[in-house]
Image (tube, rainbow, N blue to C red; front, side, top):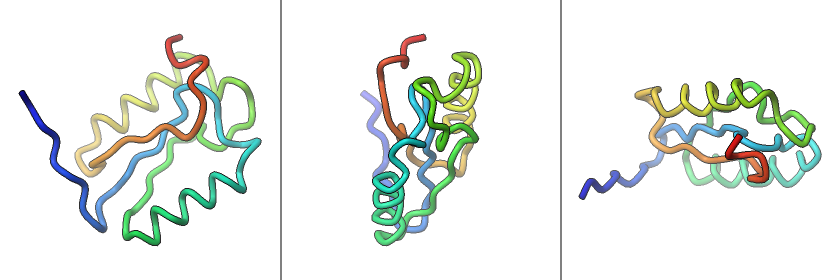
Length: 89
């Protein structure tokens, strides 16, 4: 079994929106981001994270954005900004 390494301070957390964007809830989103930054993590957002539509962008773009974070060697953890209803598209 392969176990991932724990993330450490000053490493990068990638945030994608593979379903809905966080645009309608930016206050709560900023609170979450500020908490992560206060704990010492760097944040890298994909382009559609702050969109406020039910789907952050097209299914193809959501997949590409998520995959880009997974392929980026400097990103040590990937999180979703919000949602889940359209994740399987």
